[in-house]
Length: 353
Image (tube, rainbow, N blue to C red):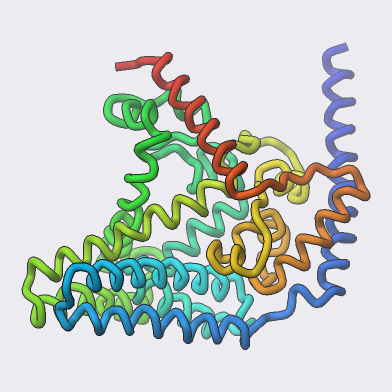
């Protein structure tokens, strides 16, 4: 009887996957027919120009050794522009600006490796794994629980020492520690590119050298080593809270999956991704990650067309009785923080040290 039951369950799961695949093809055809998947070089090009002007304009002002009020304002502007440049690198990496891979890789290095010191090839490697294994414990690098924080229960139970302490207090600490992420990315990039590791190119190496020259060598010559290091640290750390306000909402607190879950791509995206907020301003501030469900289903859709793809997808899901998680930014923050608090309590209750 157990074997018969298992075969029936396997057959039902296979049929559900087949139906999901048919639905996904139909949905994709609707989104493509609406023109959402076309590259948007003009819109993204304007975004590039504005971001570059803000970043390098503020950088030039910093070299003039302004008073602390203006200095902090310029550092905030650079942190904001750096995150925006990351959004651009994300778009060009998905070929939303151009279908020419070589051009897209070069622009990715300009807007990520040069601007933030995060090797674009390293980012793409992790990001591709995230898309392929969304919310799969141990396989999705964005929620793998390999660092100080924990994003699913099994990882919380396995933490030891300082990592368990961080997990137990992560609801508060995560906002401060997000500022460390840019520096961890720089460290990983230096190690990978200096040793000629996987994905290393001469372009990436030169862009990374240019980043450190811009932030350490030139400012040291004009401002002195102390001010140069202070600016370097603050410009990186101030990116953290901005990133945390956006990135945490996409998947944290949604369904966590084992590697062998057997779900279709459509159902996995619908059950592991949260949409939040609408409007052009929200699209700009979040780099389109407020339409994250549609991004996972249709990665090549540019930010400027994700809103239209969202309307089509929401209507399609309602018509076919499919799950669709959509909320406001504030409600999404409450959901995320409540989930992190739950994991913190779990970590405190399971002490292994």
